Amino acid sequence: MGNKVKWVKLKEFVSVFDKKNSDGKNLPVYGINKDNEFMPTVANMDGVDTSKYKILSRGVFAFNGMHVGRDIAIPIGKYNFDFDALISPAYTTFTINNNHDIIPDYFEVIIRVDEFDRLGWFYCDSSVRGGLDWKRFLDIQIPLPSIEEQQKVVNAWKAFREIKEQNEAIAAPLMQVCQSYIQELKHKYKKVEVGQFLSFNTEKNKDLEITLEQGLNIDKQFITPQRTNSDLSSRIKVRNGQFAYCTQLNNENVAIALREGPDCVVSPVYAVFDNIRKDLVLDKYLFLWFARPEFGRYVYWASKGSAYEFLQQENLCSYKIPIPSIEIQQAIVNIYNCANEAKRIAEEADRKSREVCPALIQHIIHS
Image (cartoon, rainbow, N blue to C red; front, side, top):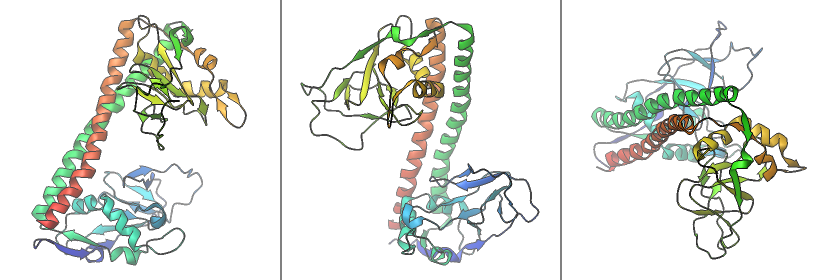
């Protein structure tokens, strides 16, 4: 342990901030997600008496000790919005005092580190849900370096967060513009069945040419499958530029994606097809239509089955889309690519912040 770092219990700098909504103010209701961020609640609040709910102001922290042992995660976060909001009385709200010269933003970084969640799991009780009592929570110790060292960690974290937020701010309106243009096309151009552009492929990996196995998720992306297989000879090949989708549906969230990367193989539960009329329709433009919620609703309605729904080739092929000129298609795809790149940068900055900041804290502790 480094000489410059002392360890302090949370109770030495945490003060309960219990301000209830006794006046019954009509304020938005928030909760905390798995990323330790405040999000609007999805619960229906119609007719709910919010007089016992707690008021959140900028800089106030909220903590919920329920399910910590079950989830190995502490629902805790710092409210960073400029407007007041409400949070369930199940949360304890608190602020940071300066008895030990701690920067509140430094504590916000600490609570986002995975080790803090694991420490909370260690401190929780032995009940089925694994609750973390408030008094036990206050016994948790954290490393507290000098104000200067704390500020270095905070500056690094804020730099990544700024990149994340800036790119999220870019991505959202661009994606809206993209979807707006697509919606307008439905009223300007005759819609045709996509089947005339598609050719299905059942090329199996009998020669074991490809060793990369992939799956698909409902976010329309290829991913590493949860279970890998030693024998890939019965898997179906997916070449760069081909489409794949899961024929078995659980709901309207269709797992479909355009392969943009090295050739891979997928489970036989997936169907693979090519766009054979690239002179009339761009791959990415076609994908944008398959990624729309209305496509999911259509194929779920058109699918066949009983306990399980199956998306047959003929159902997919009968889906209709408008086909403008290649130039208009490319313009829409360009907007989508820009939005997607901004989203990718935001996600990368978020991932880096979760890697770099814990490393900086460890460096401070052991320096």
